[in-house]
Length: 309
Ligand SMILES: [Zn+2]
Ligand SMILES: [Zn+2]
Image 1 (cartoon, rainbow, N blue to C red):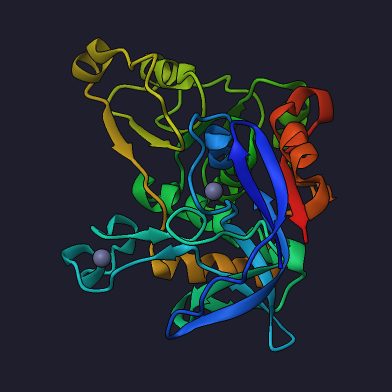
Image 2 (image 1 turned 135 degrees about the vertical axis):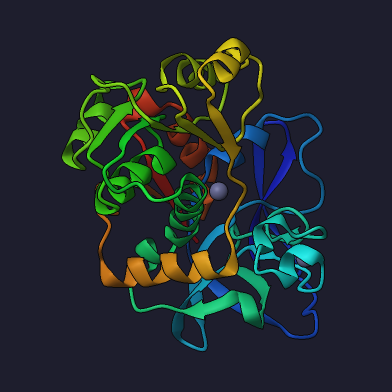
């Protein structure tokens, strides 16, 4: 089968590889669509690149002719966090795309318990994973009904959070995003400018972490700041405000199994506008182009870029 192997920083090579050995209980799925995630872009130019395996963790595909979505988080099932239903904090997690071959290939393998039939399009099914990440942010944030919610970051997670915060009954939802087209999308989802003092700030940023400082500087006294994504903490929060205004700061890591299934149900129900977020599609042979377009957001007005083997 063909797979997009990261052979050097920022260099994919389409290779004919042996399909991964079928591990006992792991199933073979013919990949239909796989999303390019901010975390994929984060490791793209890393030197040396992630060895051995090809990336891709937002995966939908066909198993025995039926559309399925893959939960890429293979949790141990026995540690104290798994025992408590907090698989997102599993002490021995294996990620498909990192510890096992990912979805930028014609085929992927996953444990039976991580493969879920879904009644949706293949493109929408590939969005279940980022929806699950967003749902976990909301669960960390707590009830949003009546709250004034600011969202920092206009990529996929930020724009999903805008939709979900509205649906959760927030009194006000504002989006702080870098690019004009992201702000327009936010408005379409009911998130205008942040012209209020938020009491909940959801920070979904990759990169330089400038959103963290904004959150600590602008969130209301005794407000709650929730952080998600690849934060490289080069620009810290303003610690003075955490103390003087008694801000609460929480992190959000991955998603539980229950949240993944909740995300699946919401995608099946069509309660989220995913078509507005899926801006580009490329065949596997053009994966380098897919990464380029996903990274150059302003130039291409890109949000979610899908690769379709
Ligand atoms: Zn991701
Ligand atoms: Zn575990």
